[in-house]
Each structure stands twice: as structure tokens, then as C-alpha cells.
Length: 299
Image (cartoon, rainbow, N blue to C red):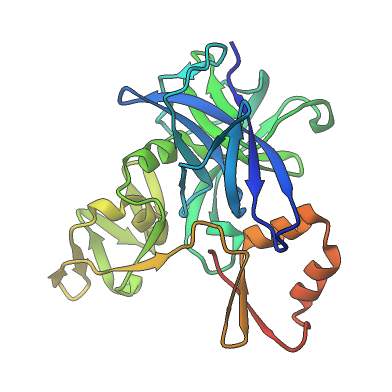
């Protein structure tokens, strides 16, 4: 049976008359007795999603990672349903596959959300495959699985000869989160924190039971925001955490214009690339259009 499903993302564009679609893949999973289609949004302004000629408008865009979650009651008789999940961290000895190609784990890479400097970081698993990239067909959203057909993650993006994948733990975490449209950060200076809950902060890193490894504090807060109950400061005082909330606009605004400042997203740059408007990209990056200031953000 097929292990992935083809998905079309219909995108909102700069001009209403523009129409653009991109093809990604997705997987069908069964979790807590419910079926979900899981795919990736790549930071793009999604208008609707089409699967097997059916348009879906009810879906969850995860602002803190690259996931799209679609609750599904539809029948996909030819599609493999993942019901078991690899929850441990990958290592080079794991036997993994992407679209029947052998894959090898290389490293855990932490990168800023939306690939925008100074944003909080989340973890990707960096993989390599045995075959030449020009001879394979791997799309964003393809599943990574082991020999027992347990889901180990999904492909987020392909860069040169490496594949960056979203861990299964993030998928399960997103399905349990109270709100995936919000990214949280601590109001307290990390340098003043000795413990979060019962875990020590060491050199701005903290042990994460989800990953079973030390990760940056900002990543920990994003993942565990629903369960952070106390902070122990270095002066010995225990306080209740105050979380800063960053609101997002569901990736549907291409540009935010206020006070002669235009804020644009990594997804917006990706959209410009898809539209082939390289001149506008160059002008934006050179910050020289009509003397208007530009700032990076995620929307």
C-alpha cells in the first residue's frame, strides 16, 4: 500500500489574479482512535488544501513548526495508515526509509522558526540517502519510517544533499497542544533561571524529556509551554512563569504594512520565488524600494 498521499496547496498571492499551486505529500496517521492527515506548510500563505479533488478548508497550521494537521473522516483504502510511532531519538544505526530509499541519520540540527535570525529554534533531524538526488522523487511531506513501518517523522525540506525532517515527537506534541497558532517565550531572562519545573538550566540549555537530550531553553518553552509550572531563579526565589505570547495570522497575510514599515515573512520570500519575481526579491533584500523600511517577521 502507498505510504504517502499527494496534496495540493492553493496559495494566496500578492495579486488576486495570480494563481499558484504547489505539490507536497502527506501521511495518514491514526492517533488516539482518530485519523489525521499530516503535511507541511513551508511558511506559505495557504488559501485551501486539495486532496483527491476534494478541497479542505478546515485545517491547523502550526506556527511553531512546519506542520499542517487535517482531521479526516474520509476513506483512503489504498493508503497506508501509520498507527505506530518511533519516539526515541534517531541515531546513525537506525535503518530508515523515505519513499523506499534507504536513509541515514546525520545529526540533530536546531534552526530558527521560519529560518529567520533571532527567532526561537526548533529541532530537525538531518538525513542523507544512499541514492543520487537526481534519481529520486522525494517531496516535502514524505514520511520517514523504519523496517517495522513505524513513523519516524516527515520531510520538511531538501537542501543540497541533505533532507531535514520533522521528528515524530513534534507531530504527537502538536496533536496534544492546546493552541498551535501561538509561540511562547519566557518573560524572565534565561540567564537568571536556575530551573524550569524540576530541570536545571545549564549554559542556556535544559533537559527535555520529549527529546531525551539537552536542548536550547527557547525550544523547550515552545514544546512544553502547556506544562511549565514554576521557575527557580538563581537568587533562590521560586516564581510562577510568565509567558510572552506571539500571535500569528495563519500565514494568510503576504505583507504587514504599518507606519511605513513593511514586514515580510520567510514564506513570503518563498512565494516570490515560486512566482518567479526574482527582481522584487533582490530589491527587498537590498532594502532599496522607495526608501521604505523592511523588517523580518513570521505572520
